[in-house]
Length: 508
Image (tube, rainbow, N blue to C red):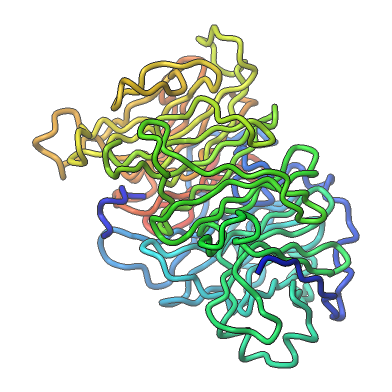
């Protein structure tokens, strides 16, 4: 998205979710590995596709993701599209000021298969949070109102059935539906693990009969729900919620769950690792600015989500403190798997979910790391010393160099980077200023050794990692400033990008 400077009980409750479809996860998800089943592709949020992306030659179809987008810059996070193994594209759509639905489209033709309303309402934030859906087996899970999860069976079919899940119990909901509808909101995308457990953050805006507090929820395959408060996760009574729009992440074996919690908008926070079955806290780390040593800031306008690397290391983007002494770039904080060691940070973290790039994909790489990290590397014109030379970069998580903004701080060494190509007319007094790279998560295509990236110039690019060149480009719109957007590769290799509130399907 555009840079931020443009915007001014310690207990676990267990409840059985009694519904007609409470035992809803009976199918192994392994058959759907070719799909893009959750935001940033998988429960580790790596952004790595399981199929090769088609050439960026033709826009086959497009569909709006907002039925009434604002004029001018778009400060809205649109939910990530998903793609089933059968090539059905699941599209979250904003239908009004704060209303949403989910649509299913045929991936080949764009034909609408079905549409379903949800009562989900985005929590208040400077950049409106999106609707974060997820797939597991033959089930689609959709955030709904009252902290409920809407489950739609057979998402490839026009006649799929649906039911609701309640992490605090159906009986409790039925006793006073209005209280829960008014006071409980899901505030992160949903994440599912390899066994079909669902995890998400939720807000509690007022009192409930069972004493709910804002925190983290888990719903098991048998419909049984558990929750733990954000204060209990952090061990700090001033912590009030799971970080806005930041989906929980899972270790590669699904045994550990990672979540960020914070105190308020622009407040301080913690990263925590929990037992993914019991929600018992295993460790926590206070999030600090690696340059100043002060508490890092977490903004409700960010959609940065945790990424777990192949070695179990954990990455999470935060804002700097003091702000904006790092040019509004924030930092990509980096921890080992149990959060006991804070490792080399990345030099850009604000509103960015890191993608994982196998080191073998980058022809010029001579280091020893088995994987590298891809992030935005914008340097916003007019913010402190920012010059508008906005880049994307692939970084070595185990090698350090002087930070380009604060040289006394060591950050991940840049392996290769790519400057944006379109001059930014909004900054005529900044020589070389270019339009921003407009990605939250970049889609990594290991089969063609390339990355698919979106730009605020209205174009979608393929970054060839063997030549370090932008080898393909296609125009999606005239270009517009907007909240950073996800990029997706579908089960048949079709590429999906959002620009100017429209989802386009691109391929050969």
